[in-house]
Length: 348
Image 1: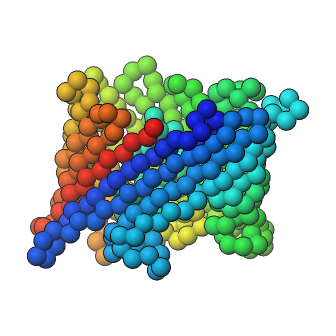
Image 2: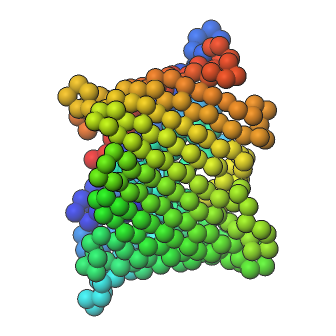
Image 3: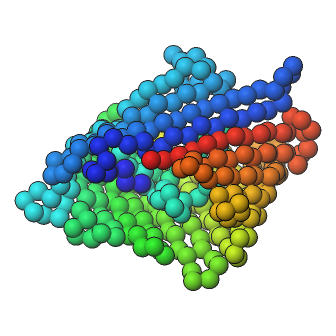
């Protein structure tokens, strides 16, 4: 998602609080996490923007060995200096450090709910297919050339692969109210004999009828010396059907072996999730339903796990509240398979 906003010198990009309650010994265990992203930016023609992230986690595995559970971490997510339309050319030239861009994540109005810490508390917290991570430059077309899309070239040190590794990525985006498309491709070098390659795409489409779909697909860190295998692929497909206030949303997600330069530990896992919900209740602010997920992993001790439970979402005052109960129906574990989730998320 493009985080630049020259018209807003200071803004909160995201504030999310999530708590998980699980049965414990003498009392239930409550684990909480909070993320805050705020962005500082200056107006054109020479723009500067930076994002700072404040995180809090009281879980058993904190962010680093230097932080105890409950300690907060403040970190710079990215800093970027840009020149907009130099000499009247419809381009934007940028110099950046950090993680300024995520490829194939989807804009907030149509991206999948099946992502991030809410659904992957034990990591990786999937969000998009590829992140630009490092120190480098980018050249992108400006809105004066096209208000509905852009083409960008990114050249940077690939921090996800370590020092002395460099990456080049090319990305194209096109956005319309009923259809959005993003495609990218790139390479990291020197790696192996011929480098490591990647490519991916994201698409969203809605029809005049009740149907729409969201999809992400790509391969990451592919070595030409090896055959392209299913475990190299990132694949998510989500068809959605809406009839008046009734919605059915299905998600099929195949986990990759590596994600953002790290092993996922679940190269053969497939998640199949379905949600049946009633929308627009209580004056349009309430959504309620049932969500069920089947996790298939031939490498795990439990080859198939089924979780189900009710979910309630309330949107009021610019805040999206969520309450969810997860019950492990198979294999059944009584109280050990029970989890309650409470979350609140907002953007300004």
